Length: 106
Image (cartoon, rainbow, N blue to C red; front, side, top):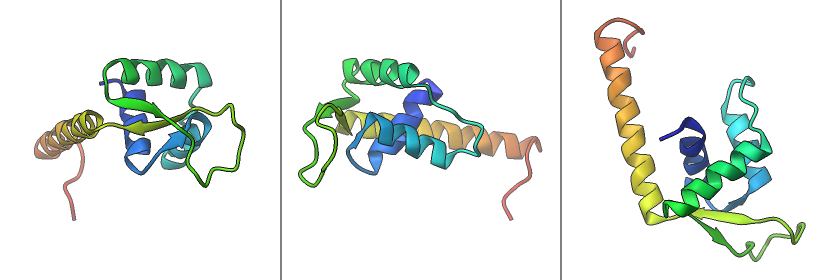
């Protein structure tokens, strides 16, 4: 899974969002070095939709914003894929700790 796709799934795991809100969430989680380009985001969203990991949704009932915004939600398959990817990454971190590439937990 590409890093941008995992970031999108992380963002949508917290709830339905529109594209710009996904970008803001990804950038807020980063260290300031991550800048998501709009085109990159929407190409990744399209791949995730095609794979059945994300689905376009209607705007939230409480959303009082631009009607042109497209909202997305994570699917059950998307949640499983994100969980599997997180487990894979955790295993990599464990192996990195075992080989002393990074410090162990305190």
